[in-house]
Length: 527
Ligand SMILES: NC(=O)C1=CN([C@@H]2O[C@H](COP(=O)(O)OP(=O)(O)OC[C@H]3O[C@@H](n4cnc5c(N)ncnc54)[C@H](O)[C@@H]3O)[C@@H](O)[C@H]2O)C=CC1
Ligand SMILES: O=C(O)C(=O)COP(=O)(O)O
Image (cartoon, rainbow, N blue to C red; front, side, top):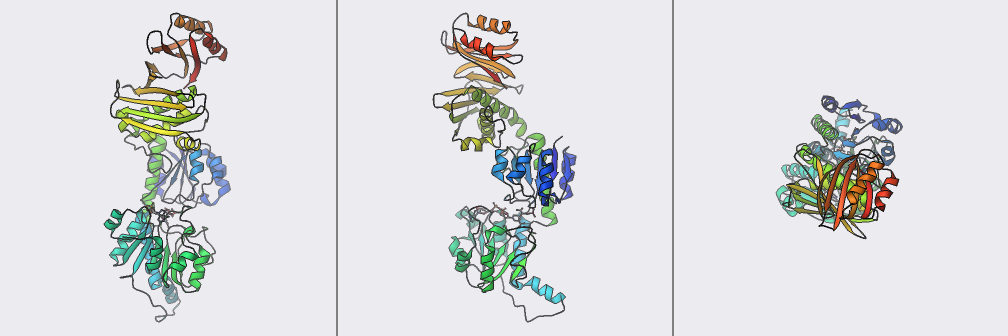
């Protein structure tokens, strides 16, 4: 039974789903804060479910020997070292929509809080001061709201802003002009957004491009009296620069839900009269937490129990519906890769996947990932479908996919061609109605063979006498032949023999096979 650890606070719904679906679950909501303890026990788990408190560093991943999936119950994954997870073959998935409305609402709430100084007025009134003349607000109607990052959350903020009769402008390099028109927002460049906005709200992920997007030079481009809202990530704003701009009065107010270092228990902006602060509450509503807990638990169970992949950041999706149909072809792709990988002794320049017939309409990204895994596994034991494409890229192996609507002799065919300095070697296979993968072609030679755990691959000249001598040699060595498959280009031309044997094949026996007069190559293959 797979084991999952939940190391941040999640709705009990998640725990229940894991249990109901037959996944062992340990719920330790405060463990995210305790790096050492987490590192001590992470090796026992197949899955890790987190929010933003748990930092999944390369160091932690090193200790996570059995980990297959990290599920982020939320959106931002900047607390996960995705390249390190990918390198170890661990899927990282999030729940991209579960808390977006809630977070957008928090941004709007923060905008109102700033415009009417609600937190300060609230505190003063509770103190019995009745400072009616101290708090003078600004109206939102007709003001310009500048949205930086107009994705899921930014778009919801835009709709709400328009509902409040604001003029909404947005900077987002990936926002299409059509989408901007649909949303009713004006797409602008960043400097123009800075120049024109009365309120600026941030909704980009934290990346190397967006880090410090609001620094002193950006602040100086803004209108005097601008108000800034950040419900995305702390590192988007240079906090010291913001403080200077608030102190000088250039920025009239800032509402911050997120901080460069969290948890933020002391901060240079705490106590500032024009700063509204909340402790990363953007996603904290009952509704959003139910959504993300349910989604992350279902997604992690689907992966651990069925191999279905949803919302992964480092692996193509495989839906629960397609997983049963895809699985035998995933297996076939990996076996073909393994076959070609074991036969390849020189540096690989490229891998070409040709998908013909039914399989060309399947999820070929997943199949390609499986095929690359098979090719690389003989040299890199730990590679899997998650890490293989990245590893291939890192090694300069060009990956090509070709799709053809129909296959010559089969309903579905996958041909894998490994390109090296010296040659191209192709091997093709299919899955029969029994769900078993079969090899149907090697180097253009047709044959039909099942994959067995231990096989001998021989290329030879098609001449009488070879089969008898080869079989005799195996018999003399006490090696039992399970299946025997032959194919050739033409009479007397190149031929291939693929034999499944029971048990291992000593190197000395292979040497003897290789020494037979008509043999060009003999190799032991293990699947
Ligand atoms: N405070 C909180 O509790 C929460 C914070 N978040 C944060 O909000 C972020 C955004 O979430 P979503 O809208 O769901 O993500 P999303 O991926 O749907 O949207 C992000 C948008 O930012 C844009 N973008 C990327 N680089 C940009 C750049 N350099 N300049 C301008 N725009 C850029 C993208 O094109 C995309 O449209 C998350 O990454 C997360 O960090 C999310 C949920 C809760
Ligand atoms: O989903 C996100 O990106 C968030 O920032 C929410 O964070 P949290 O789950 O509340 O720690």
